[in-house]
Image (cartoon, rainbow, N blue to C red; front, side, top):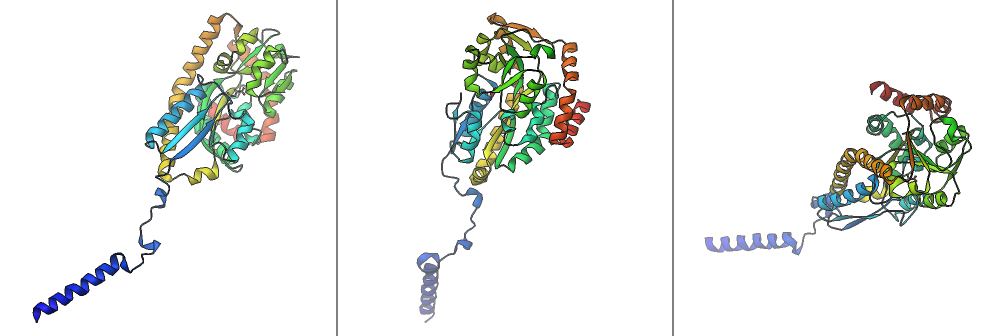
Length: 350
Ligand code: LMR
């Protein structure tokens, strides 16, 4: 009898176990511990990174380095495909392409961003930042936070700021040493109202052309000159089309690395973390190399003997800064004094 009861008990337990495991009980979604952050973790993601400069420049080298780091950190699950030299889009076209998710990463010059958010014109103020340390303090501190916060209202997610370097004057008419030397020159600029205004304030005319048009407009004499960093002047061959270069360091050319805000939110958190780590490491690498890269380019420009180079003295630089005082007042009124006050605090702290 006892044996019979034991047998029946085992049979009943076995039946319940069979039903529970899968033959009968439906386990609702709630029964599984779904780690939403892992959603999509095993789906390959391709990020298209478009930029407009040559590969052997600070931004070009940084983009390639970033792509390699992302591949390593995600074990290949996220692939960044870099398209340099404006192969896909010019700088302003990149913003629309980003919004349409036709590209996923862009790194426009800060001056290009001003078209979408005028607050960014503060970064175009001539001689506002006395050295790279002060610029980086702006990037890393409240100035950078305010600018990225403001831009996120336009649907752009700011990942980081990348460096290039200070801009220099080049032209075909005369050596530029003092502000009046720019009078009546026609100069190519990026599409920033503050840049256009700066040249008009100097008695010159400012003309907006995309980066890939610059070589042609210089060689064809459409404009007398332009401004850019040493790495861009060398890598794009502008020095072969210009008589004079002034190492003025009159304003800083940096980049905002941007993603589409809503696309960023679709990336699994684990991959977002890898991307942010790769971006942080690349930004640090670039800071340690951009100054050196521009110094190397200056040496190549000097050795080329293709362009007459004048380096502003400290006294000449002070004269430019004093000359621009009314421009700072105008833009502090237009942009608001919060950002200018933060920059003044950086100046005092530096
Ligand atoms: C330009 O002058 O348009 C370039 O400086 C752009 C860039 O990305 O460096």
